[in-house]
Amino acid sequence: MMQPFRELTAVAAPLLRPDIDTDIIMPSREMRAVSKTGLGDGLFAGWRYTAPHSREPNPDFVLNRPDYADTEILLAGANFGCGSSREYAVWALKEYGIRAIIAPSFGAIFQNNCIRNGILPITLDESVVAAIAANVAPAPQSRKLFISLVDCQVRTPDGTVYDFTIAAQHREMLLDGFDAIDVTLKHRDEIAAFEAADQERRPWVHAFPPGD
Image (cartoon, rainbow, N blue to C red; front, side):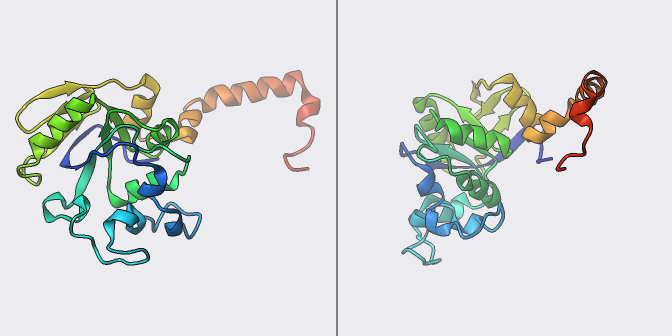
């Protein structure tokens, strides 16, 4: 199981340029192994560090600024996570500590990968995302953003509330901390009943152990 997502109060960092693709989020040169761990340092490596293959922080990049330390919410531009289906991008965001992303739109595969890895993708109008960024900007460490997946709301430090929508099955997965396998296993009793009935109906199919 993954960490359930119900409510979150956290620092929100703006990265509002449109069309940030998965290669920008997680450059291919940072993908050295097939693993969900050890990827956080590679997140936004092309922007986050001063040069390729360097780990010297770029002081101009938002996530390197002290006022956005411990960011758990990204405020992004339209079509965030477009490009390839690179799931490493979501793994890197998760390992870095990002738990929610608010954007006008997402790459479709990226959005699904977020849900399946416990990151909440929230779609709000571009003007709303810009207003949220402006609201937290004066003091990001004290003007934290509140997200409730229980109520499907985002609340800014000044008390403004924005409602968002999310597919019922995706909301349930995130609230429960379930990935796709966990969702399937919720039906284990029905699966077992089907298998038992199928053994009665078609015994020849089950005559040999799997793999024989």
